[in-house]
Length: 391
Image 1 (tube, rainbow, N blue to C red):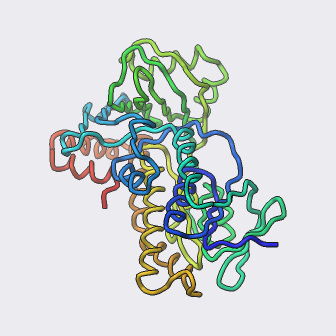
Image 2: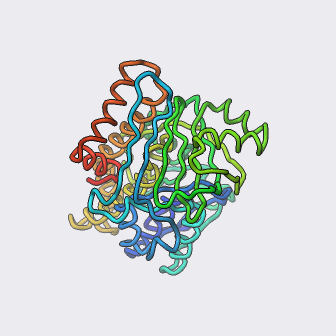
Image 3: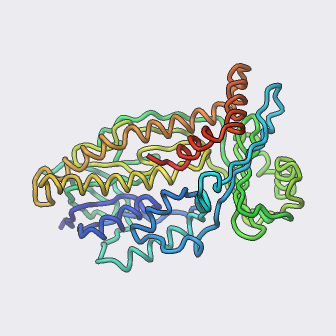
């Protein structure tokens, strides 16, 4: 026998769980299909618009209890190239803000989201995976690995880069693989970062230290995947020697607090992320290298626009009892999300390629751009708005 709901959300990550909470709070019957997976060792720097959204949805009451404030960003050009950018410091107070945002551990944030979800009207959670998606009348039937079936009017695909909902739903996407990978770990520093995120820009990508409270820092190190794999294979001493060198000895002795985990980099963009009663959120709709702190911020804007699309459909009289309700919601979502996904993906791609490209004129453009940001308060404010996802 099939289970029925207004909405099925597929995916147990941060974007999917945030969508479940936002939908359940608005009175929709929701089934959450969340197969259990490994703990997410990454962290997410959420800008203030994202933090404000989490507060408004009741997902986070006080960010200070879960994360660490980010009030400045320091860029250091370590490429060693003929044309280099100046060292630049961006401070939130320039924009009249106490902070740009907060740095959260993904696993801790997800556990908190789950607690919030548990306190809402009952949401049925199934820990199987989806094996098939089929259109049935005005809705969709999902078949799970345990043989169960679920039928819903609206399906939210938050099932990551290899999204079955994206593939089975016939969404077009552009995907690019990179030779680079990212290494993440937690470090103890002899000299703390305070509230400043520090990015050393190297030829194959940034080496970024993000404050994680006290003398702790979250590391995101992008380099050629063969280089990173070799460092992992050589062991802790080789890793720490590389980290000490890449940080230019600015923070004294470094200690490794967690295992260093490597993941491959790719870029994905879906121009139209909603149609026919299906919507894609988070990495099912977009993914890119971890530069500029845009990944989860964009995913939470997906959830915000999904909520707005629901409200818009109902304001036009297309309530849950209307046979065209889910199609109207997904169409509105697809129309509103495209430009943000395209713009943000293009911005991150340009930033990443400006580091890795060896073309001298391109290096000059990058260096000139950072000089302009360093010297012009007006341009810095434009950059702040773009980086924070203000629309």
